[in-house]
Image 1 (cartoon, rainbow, N blue to C red):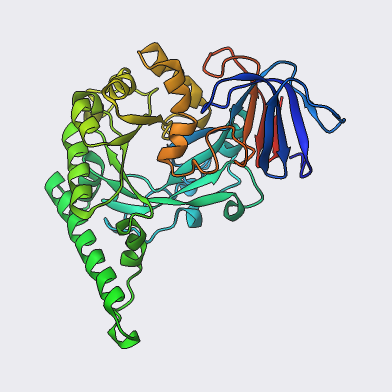
Image 2 (image 1 turned 90 degrees about the vertical axis):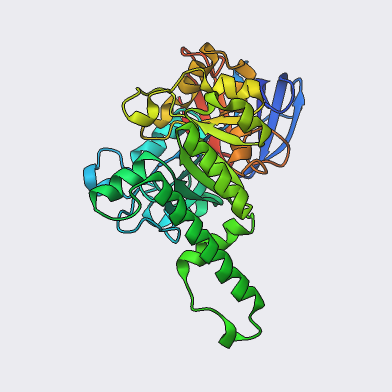
Amino acid sequence: MRDMTDRYTIYNAHIIPVTSAPFDGWIEICGSKIADMGTGVPDNLTDRDIDAHGHNIYPGLVDAHTHMGLIGDGAGEEGIDVNEGSSAVSPQLRAIDGLNFYDGYFEDARRAGVTTVVTGAGSLNAIGGSMIAIKTAGRTADEAMIRTVGIKFALGENPKSYYAERDEAPQTRMATAALIRETLYKARQYAEQKAQAEDVTDLPEFDLKYEALIPLLQGEMRAHIHCHRADDILTALRLCEEFSLRPLLIHCTEGHLIADILAEKGAQAVTGPILCDRGKPELARADYRNAARLHEAGVEIAICTDHPEVMIDMLTTSAALCVKNGLPRDTALKAVTINAARLADTADRTGSLEKGKDADIVMTDGDILDMGTSVLMTIIDGKIVYSK
């Protein structure tokens, strides 16, 4: 990893900021941040500066839903730490405690220009652990982590099937929703008792599960809700309305069936995985046009790989497939950059090229959504982490 902590400039570039019009010019980096941008060729260039040779410069790509580092590269069962099956309610689990930041898939992400991912628990638990936004390069996961952005919930086939096999609850969709509702109600009571306590003797007995849910109840993070079927999607929104949660619909596979309703409710969805078959009941009505139909209805979307369901280096291929099926190209680009960052609650730092934002930059030899395009360089926090 090349360390360029001082100020340097990438020039002779075609820059696509995403949030503003493309232009030919330069981008200046100071430490880990974008210091400035401009047109033309800057004065006083040095041998530290990088000639882009007219290539395209994009913001680093953002994948808003993965299980990076929790399902390992070639590690078999030993490398799988994504689901804690001992309890259907486990919000106290912290993704960073199970994350292998040195897994080979992080290198794949860097080579593909993916600089930020949201990763965390799987979908066996009705309430799983934390979802965190993290850069794909750095010395340690703690240093690379941006912030905790949500708590994982799951509706539908996965929790009911898993716990039915164990002869435990929940075994139906009704039981899954009831378990979530009961836990959120108790967590809200717990938070109220803490707030009303006049001294330590009035405090409720410490409960790590409820503690983990307090930021969610206070709107400081989102409920990341695994939901494929239309009825599960609506259950997700119903539960969030009951407890004033900020919902993020993960997968939203049958969203195209109720796109108008989701738009009316102001729902936001992370669609994907795109490059997969209809290999289980909940995917029976999967449609490559889902992202386009949601967008047409007015639903803000991101596109994800759900790595390793689809490999992390297939993020732009997934976006390109959505374009082929009706999603406007500029919307598809935003769905893996600024819109993904907004839905991941990292848009203050990532997702676009703007002065003051993190210097997460990708150089390509063509349109990043074209199959024949290569990533030539990836920069994260001002450091070159991949160069072809």
